[in-house]
Amino acid sequence: MDTDSDSDREKTMHADLVVIGFGKGGKTVAGRMGALGKRVVMIEASDRMYGGTCPNVGCVPTKALVHHSGKRRPDDPPQEFYAHAVNQVQELTALFRAGNYEALNGADTVTVITGRASFTDAHTVVVGEGADRITVTGDIILISTGSEPVIPDIPGLRDNPRTVTSTQLIEQTLLPERLAIIGGGYLGIEFAAIYRRFGSQVTVFETAPKIFGREDDDVAAAAEAILVDEGVQILSGSRVTEVRDGGSAATVVYERDGVGASIEVDAVLAAAGRAPVTKGLGLAAAGVLTTERGAVAVDEYLRTSQPHIFALGDVNGGPQFTYVSLDDSRIVLDQLVGNGMRTTTDRVAVPHTLFMTPPLATVGLTEKQARAAGHRVKITSQPVAEIVAMPRAYAVEETRGLMKFVIDAESDRILGAALLSVDAQELINTVALAMRHGITATDLRDAIYTHPSSTEAFNDVLGAIVRIDEPETTQA
Image 1 (tube, rainbow, N blue to C red):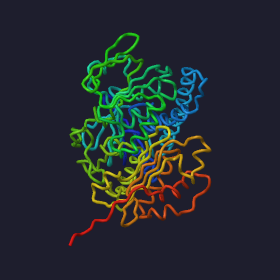
Image 2: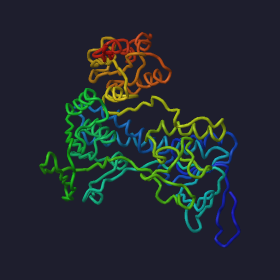
Image 3: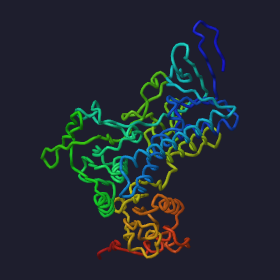
């Protein structure tokens, strides 16, 4: 580190690569470039976010809570059990956080600076103020600041002391006896499933006519039935109009089917999505453009309006998944040390998983989407409880759900799948791999799988044709 001799004793540094934000994509590029001998500076705003969203407030703690919630027995005191689970999860995230910090800062070529960064020009950022101010210049700069929870503009919600974001909720050791969740998307449904299993009374408010609106009706109905059977109250087609502070409780006021109503709860989770973190970055000073939704605008190579500045992960407005951020790192590394050919358009059959219990994993087209795209399709579908070749579901006592495949009737190629089952988060990766490499439904059905495993369910379900579109006929 160089130190200027001026009166402010301002510290200055220069790096081959400057990374703003410890997200998955940015830290992966930083680690690789550091290993290649490049001088790297990683700047992270919070010492509680080393490693990014996933290991600290996202995937790791929430999925760990899914696991712990499933272990609670009927006679386990909910509050005591929950507090113990939260403490265990926080110990896990602290371990991951320390490991991520050391993995980078322990390298000879990488320096981690903790503080908020702001551009002053296209090659310069400043961190801190006064005597602690550091000026960092870089040849290449990556923006990897991620996203943050959105609190909807509902009267009384933002300022209510019982309103929490997902980040705040998973760090609190007090289990809310009554939990309202505003938003029935992936985040809202996952938290509904988790907290109901911990023992909370959960009510989900969703403005859309139904939850799982992107799925086919049969899949959506099966998934919703599981939640309802577990005791989650789902108020689809409802609009929260106000959240009142009642001291000992919050009152959620809402309208549904033209009728006003209200409920009292101990906590209100704002689960209306996440927005890119760009505030305070000084993007205008760097000449970096943003989209109408506030994300950093990028091309298919993840370059911003400044060709030496890239944006990776949630901040660039793409799919908000850690594994997509990891793929972003591959695209950027291909630009920096590869042949520069890899782009976001190369992504095919990217799977998704909603971690309710059992998980709902999907990839590709739904039945509705496939027909809308002009495909003649055949549909295979089976309830998990009826899949003879899947004894694992009975062995682990989780036979709820179904498996559904959408197949092109002419080519036998898999167009999409929805797996609502035990191990679905793993099974969907096999299906996605098959889709990417043109493996037919028949090939996947007739493959040899270990026994007993969930994968061997493909032997049955891919032969269980429930309907097939008739070929079009031409009249003479």
